[in-house]
Amino acid sequence: MSRTTLPFYAHDISAVARSLRQQLAEHDAPPGHVEMLNMLARSVGHRNFQQLRAQIAAYERLSDPPSAEAEAVDFRRLERLARCYDGEGCLARWPAKHSERLIALWVLWSRLPAKQAMTEREINERLQSLHGFGDHALLRRELCDLGLMERTRDGRVYRRVERPMPADAQAMVQALKRRNRDA
Image (cartoon, helix red, strand yellow):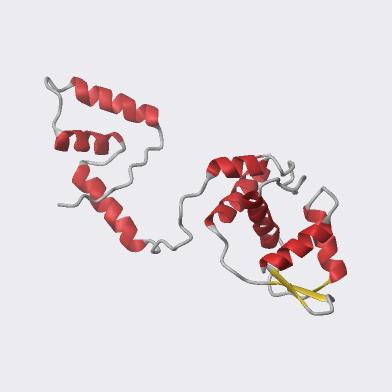
């Protein structure tokens, strides 16, 4: 029989530990497998393991199916990348690692207006306002090379290309918004 993996999330691990300690103290002998599952479920506010499993199944049925981009986000990489941003969320320095540069370019892309044609001067001004290391031409070139922005052959008109953001980039945008809101 194959096992179904179920996510287990607790808002407060200290409360889980207290609940488990209290429930274990009520038992004379070590609990069996099913009783331990019930204890874990009760420690996060469910009646029993069956109710926890039904709750998770309902959530999965009602939520969007996971996409190919829904891989695990590397939050340590995002934490390192966040050091490249100043207090206002402006890119203060160009990241050294290629993988971090890609995420930084997605963040810049998210801050450009959608479905709007811009002149080279307008895009330069926008990029200058979004970074602090003085190389807007590098950012403009990288955005075009990555396919996040397109330009006409003569380079007069630039436009953001609409594409779905990777999960890492979405998480970075949210982290920067949270950090700016908390500051």
